[in-house]
Length: 323
Ligand code: NAP
Image (cartoon, rainbow, N blue to C red; front, side, top):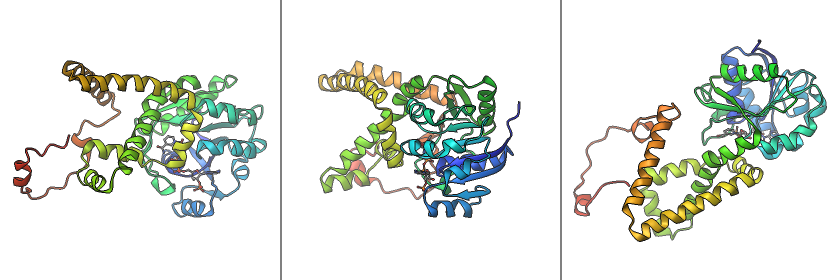
């Protein structure tokens, strides 16, 4: 089975689109890459970075003659994009995407897919908090999962071809039902982002004095939330608008568990707290052994060697722990 495509059209060329372009080129998976985006500035930047061969602001023009089309824009833009490109898609082409939700994508794009075009939505579980064409890098997908949710009428050979494409980009690939994808991602990605946005928002609303202290002394806990809360506002707005039911279901469970935890703190229930924290530590270890996170201290952040600080004022106050 051939993993090679004649013409790859990328609609949207931010972090994910540019990473696909770089990885596909490096692996020799495509002859021609055509790129469409919304704004001239972004298109110019993509051209400067030499991410493709054809550059246009017209998505329909970009997909003409393409045998692989991947939507790489925010999910909220998909409806209008699908309507625009539908009539220009070639019979036999594979139409895919990278959006973080999948049921909505089937619902909004599906009706615009002409007969003979293979509709195989996808979601690479890889990303950073950076956006735009210059944020991409060819190794973004290495060792990360990519989930595909093929439409029911897609021949297995076409799904296999797209699986092979993502594997060649470095991903592990799994196919599943779109609703199942949305439920799993609601708890592993969407709700954690909502929690991060909430906690960082709470700090933003604190009195000015306290806020500066929090920022000054931000240790790993708060700092790691700020990394997630710096994620692209438009992309995440669309995630919560389009995966509402699954997110609300998981938030319900989260709230029940949080109430139980709040009660354990109020009652001074040490064994309950310790039992939970022991279980959660084991989960972190299993994520590391599955190769989905680094075991290096402090998430592998580089630490500058610096002269030993004078700790005497801290010792007087009884501690220097950052918990
Ligand atoms: P990004 O860096 O912000 O780039 C988005 C791209 O989409 C830009 O090129 C933007 O173009 C373009 N775009 C926006 N509206 C458009 C429209 N109406 N028509 C055509 N192009 C349009 O975003 P990203 O992080 O690559 O995310 C893209 C997709 O990947 C999203 O659907 C997201 O759910 C999914 N995803 C993201 C991550 C992540 O961690 N970032 C991970 C997995 C999946 P202009 O600059 O010209 O407006």
